[in-house]
Image 1 (cartoon, rainbow, N blue to C red):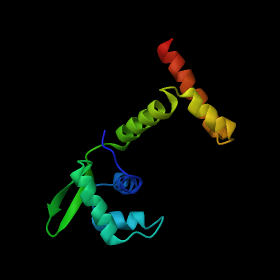
Image 2: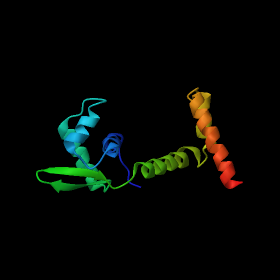
Image 3: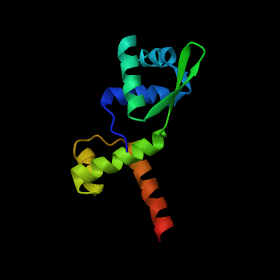
Length: 124
């Protein structure tokens, strides 16, 4: 999977919202949360193109960017990588860490229970 930085991920996340998108569209989306400089965003877009995370089509005098990887695919890969690196491939210690620090909400617990119930049905 493609390795991208935190700031590159923020640009990807803005692009995943709706694409194809111009650099201006992406800047507007990013500026809803914090102030991004146009040159910074364009540099990050160039890096993402070089990493084959995104590509573009030239339309008249502008470039329309689109992702080459789906968000769900990227998130699944990153999640597996984190669990493998930090928890020897085991999810329980990760969840336990959140539970021990009171970072699990009632909604989180209910969603985890539903996932476990579904897994048990599928894997009998």
